[in-house]
Amino acid sequence: MSPSEPAKKLTRKDFVSDQDVRWCPGCGDYAILATIQRTLPKVGADPAKTVFVSGIGCSSRFPYYMNTYGFHSIHGRAPAFATGLKLTNPELDVWLITGDGDGLSIGGNHLMHILRRNVDVQMILFNNRIYGLTKGQYSPTSLVGLRSPSTPLGSVDMPVTPALLALGAGARFVARSVDTLAKHLGPTFIEAREHRGTSFIEVLQNCPVFHDGAWDHVKDKKRTSETMLMLEHGKPMLFGDKDGPQKGLRLKPNSLELEVVTVGEDGVSEADILVHDETNRPMAFLLAGLEPPTFPMALGVLLREPAPTYDASVLAQVEAAKQQGPTNLDELLHSGHTWTVE
Image (tube, rainbow, N blue to C red):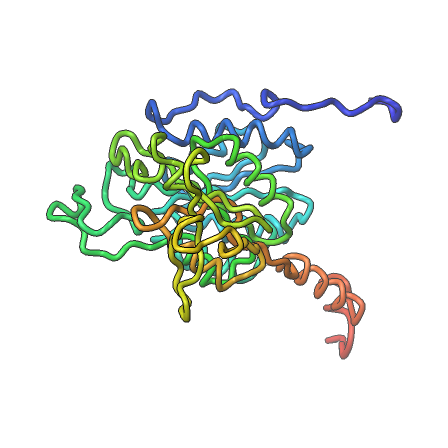
């Protein structure tokens, strides 16, 4: 290509690999894959500088289906591989793909450390509240009472809320979306990629074989106006039927608890509704724990908190160390106090 020749404009096809996609019919993974493949050309991603790293699970087949670099690693350890890749080649655009089992069970420790370190990668956690690849055992996000091959009498474990765990581990960017909401999921991926540091995106994803309808209480098209709260920075946290009375969130008087109120009732006006602030970490904790039927599920960016990245800090430290002495192993071995043995 000559210097004057414009760069080729990429499309979704440029990010689609030649591998047959092997997920069950109706799996939410298809929608997430398609959204990623449509999103990357929009942000000018370069397939030669993009890499998808995964662990083990249905979601972890993802790298095979992307026409980029990929690394199908070992169970729960994808964050460690992603950290190494970013430190070795900081120019790489690293995407980390995991699931509620891979990321929160055997990989919980690694997930916590990549979040607190703030490595500059995008982490997408597919949450279907079940182990799909190994045929339907309960996972860390499964609800109490779930009957599965590993909990025939019903699970007695309290479930993990991924967004809360991420916030507790010190994540600086936490977002949530839904597999089939392409118009919401795509922009969420773009915002995650623009953030410098670890971007954690939980995607509510359906497993039609082993846990079909796990998110129906959120995704039911007849009720989404009541069950989904679309967060926008600087906008009131309103939801509900646009043709009817709008509902919103506010803090209970003299309390740090949220409550749902209806605008126009009991003296409530829009001025009483909380305004979403992506930089408010305490509020992000409150929003992350909401779920129907009492509250709507908060979708969008819960927290965006810029901070120095781990990879940039480590590489700066390496450069500083080079200024203080030998720059390679050979120079190091032949510097300082040396002697010759005769």
